[in-house]
Length: 153
Image (tube, rainbow, N blue to C red):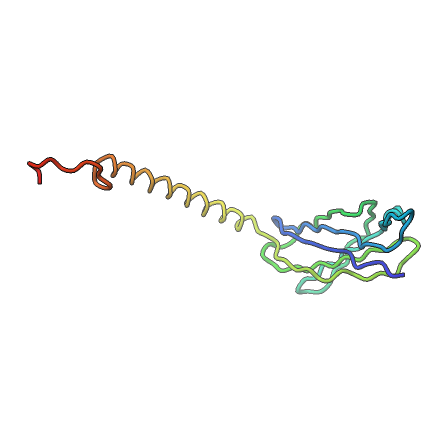
């Protein structure tokens, strides 16, 4: 029997990629309960392959005892596109199907700072505009509730 493919989701962080891996489901039952791969094998190996413009890089083999687990691929170049595929194997079963490739760009610190600056400026501008409108209203320039005295008309 083939293991896989696992379900993989990725998100970017600063100069890194967060990888969430969910083990594939099985169809083995024991006492009407569906068994997970961890129930069957206790421990599984997983390989993460990172694809970049200059080729594929297989990362060192890791082990898991969880059905859903996380990995962080660090020291990446910012604003570059990276693709990730994960393959799960067991000590007794080396036949496996890798996950589909998932691609994302690693964030840069500058990009994160840029978003913070834009949001801060938008909030400050909104507060200044609200303050100016309040002053104009208090000074009687806009939205006057009282009509002018007859002598001024």
